[in-house]
Amino acid sequence: MSASVVSLFQGSTAHSPSYGQLTRAGAAAGTGGAVTDFCIPCNPYFPTPAMLDGLRGRLHEILTYYPSDAGTITAELCQVLGLNPQTVAMGNGSTELITWIDHLLVRESLAVPVPTFGRWTDQPMETGKRVDMFPLPERDGFALDPAAYAGFLHARGSRVAVICNPNNPDGGLLPRRALLALLDELRHLDLVVVDESFLDFADGAVDGGAPSIVHEAVLRPNVIVLRSLGKNFGLHGIRFGYLVANPGLAGRVRAALPKWNLNSFAETVVFMLRDHRQEYADSIRQVCRDRQDMRRHLSRLPGLTVYPSQGNFLYVRLPDGVDGAVVRDRLLERHGVLIRECGNKIGSSSGFLRLVVRPQTDVMRLVSGLEDVLGAGRGAVVPEPVGGTAYSSGTAAVDRIVTGYAG
Image 1 (cartoon, rainbow, N blue to C red):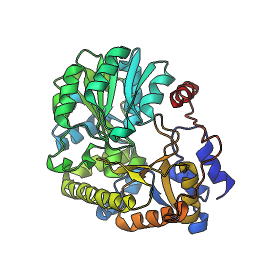
Image 2 (tube, rainbow, N blue to C red):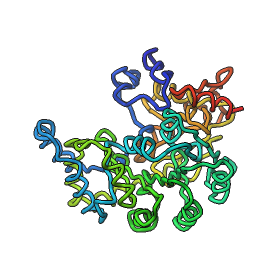
Image 3 (tube, rainbow, N blue to C red):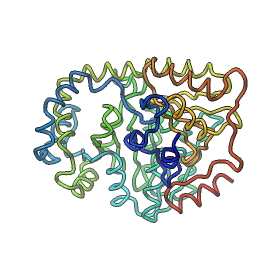
Image 4 (cartoon, one colour):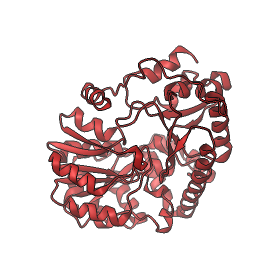
């Protein structure tokens, strides 16, 4: 692998380099340039080829003209989802909404279980808030214990709590009844954010088996539910997501957002959804089947621990002494397979990978690559670098906390 590609992973960032950065740097030059992406958690079955053809046919129009204002796009989304527009704010990706939640609604402190999505730890730290991190125990499969989390919040005096459901990177899901009971327990807090960005990928979600709590959130004074359209639809590049809360909370965020914060691609897709709900539901069901198959194949590799997940990804522990950064680099160089090594996630380490669920043909390429890199059947052969892999989040305060946390 070229030095320029390696440097992309060594930069001061809490996230992996973008797909565009890797392809421009010739990340998979040894495999003809093709990259099979197990890093970015997309839906590989949506939009359908017919929908993509429709987008291509309107490309000139989409690129040429201004989009409608955010209110118009939000109203259409609410029509499709059966929501009141007064309870919804749409953002240019869920990270934009996380930023505004932090600026507008987090005053002193925020608590979040870790490991989790990096913006929930890094964003409030960047604005000088205290972040109370509740470690999810590996012995319990990284499952969140509601009573223990509530006790932690009380002991720390945290004013805002975040619950990612399912959580990223492990895919742990708190059952609906337990989640609502926890919200009752936390009714004294300034705010509780339930990040449901990956909920549609939970077993039975599109058939009513793992329903969102958006309808309960609008009745509560201190609850926001965050949803991601880019993750669900496999369209991260468009950058669109939304939050649901009571009209006062939602309106406060909505008033802070620019009037034209959503682009024409987002508008076009939102207005296509009404006619393609069945295809979307079918795509989610296929991802759930693929997750079961992928977990079965990975579990057969010697030394790997594959944790249960309700997201469109699997959290995997490598054999002892194996460094994920080395595995990542060799998979990309030798096999053109891109994975997410979790050494820069707070509460995780370089001994863990997050692998996105993909179709079986791609999974076989991943399994073959892991067999080669790990020397499956002959014991682990990838050494851990002396001194371990240094963590860099891009935020000095985070790095200091992680250094202490690891000790």
